Length: 137
Length: 137
DNA sequence: GCATAATATTCAAAAAATCGAATATGTGAA
DNA sequence: TTCACATATTCGATTTTTTGAATATTATGC
Image (tube, rainbow over all chains, first blue to last red; front, side):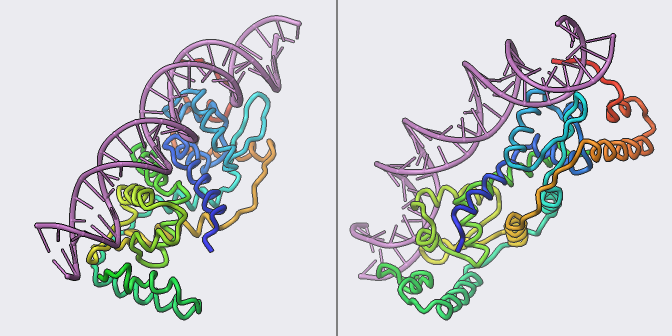
């Protein structure tokens, strides 16, 4: 049903990932917990900025911290999610190029599936693309 | 060496994913190719807007199209990437909560590993958190 | 050629993200 | 308490994103 709420939540979560500095932070934390000072030494960003990015990651519930004296030790709240996502993005997939003919065939297969699944024929023709507004293809 | 170029590229790619409408488009395309008119019927957005989002996805090389008469049939350039990412984001992982003690132990293990890996002891104490100084601007 | 459907692009305004600078808060040691 | 360090927050300026409206482009049938 492609829930619109879900899409919004997912988009927000992905946005938290979508910054080079935040990716670096996550990658660092994937190796183990770190306090902010540690990260300052590793990342090419100033303290305030790192703190700001950490706030974004906290809001997204990707990281949390435990206080250790004067230090705040950050760690990944969902290490599997983060690690798997980083791995995924590191992978490279050969770029696909499809022909119009291939696509036509695929669309027809898809349309048939939809046809048999739902008995409503109303929008099926539109999805199928058989005939739209008196103009074919 | 967490390559900064790579982080930037990854962040940009993730940004392309990070919008509810674009996620919906990708999810739709994950089921099979679609032309823009098809998507207009499915998505709660106007033609121009969908076209704009498709342009973003094209720039990110996540989708491409094949012309079929007057129609442009869009498809996923890297279906595995998209599908795996969508699956990953659908998964839910129990939120982790760590104590300061746990983290301290983890940090020490990590510091030891770094110690043995690189023979330079200089920044090891910083990583360990023994004694820190230096304020910068 | 012309009309039309499908799709893209341009433009401007509004909203959101980013960043540095300054400042504030919290914590342990002396 | 007071100090120093670690970290967070606020603020303002700049940049980027997002969107609707209007307009442009392209392919097809006539």
